[in-house]
Image: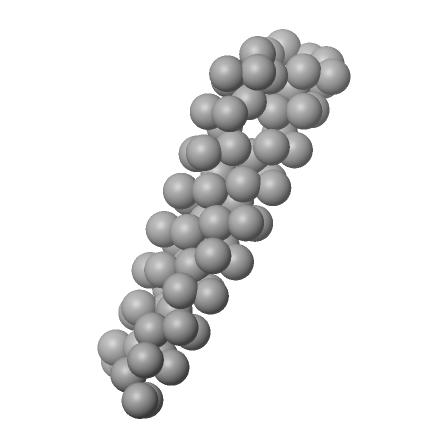
Length: 74
């Protein structure tokens, strides 16, 4: 299997998971618990932060990977 596919998949996973965890902990600091009972405003706010964090982490991982590919070509 192609090594670049492994790097792509692994960097996407690490970026998404890292961003989602960061969003989760920011939500916890703001008292937004995604695991609270029911769909309260606090739980929905926490879910939104996890989603935004995961998306931003994924985008950062992709930009990092593209930058590293450009540096290898030079």
